[in-house]
Amino acid sequence: MTAAMRSNVVSSFTIIKGALIPETYSTFRHWDFALSAAANLLELKRTNHIGAKSANWLRDVVFVIQRRFDPENRDKTLVKLAVEGCDVESWKPLMLWHMTRDEFLVRDFLINWLYTKYKDAAQRLGTNDVVSYLCSLSTKNVEVASRWSDSTSKRVAAGLLKIAADFGLVRGTVAREFSTYHLCEESFIYLLHAMMDELQNAVKVIACPDWRMFLMSPYDVEAELLRLHQFRKLHYQSAGSIVQLELPCESAAEYAKRLVA
Image (cartoon, rainbow, N blue to C red; front, side, top):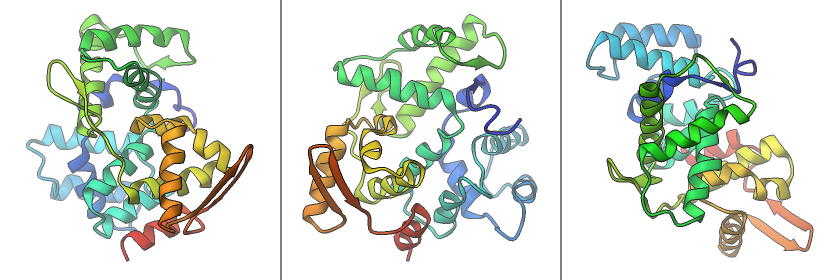
């Protein structure tokens, strides 16, 4: 099944396995662009350079990375950043954005549920709260890969909260609380480029729902643009419906080269 065909297909497996940030970074850190994606993953299975604790865990990691990412095309820039040793803390938000091109449920959970709770100043987030959200999936254009038992739904709910915690959006264990999250400057500018690559329109970039994954409203995005404009990191002007946004580079790929130069 291609990424386009499965864009709204929800599978419990990858959610339950978690974010796998260290494993993904290490996999891409050792990536060889002279080989195909399949060959790189076979090499990972052979060498276990991520230090997987068992053969089964290694197999599962390979499956999840294969399911989430397209290193030869859509996600090539993300992989190149890891290969060149991009700082992990700057790389993590980029991984989240890239993985949600395919992980529909993670994206929907973050922008339509978690962000709403954040704006409502929710104090505690528990598994049962997320189970209620999962029940609403039937009202959306979503195809669940297989019918979930109550136990699976709870594991998926816990997995979604754990992914949010791994990316620093929430903290805690049983009862989660919102963290004081801040998207670093390098990550923010990369995401500006990536969204501009897709949307080709500054107004749409500022209003893009993807910013909610980082707990940012359009107002927050504009405030950061004004700050970066003040420090001459980019050019931003807004007058009514007219918005001018000039980014440092022509594309996310070009900006990525600058990040690791």
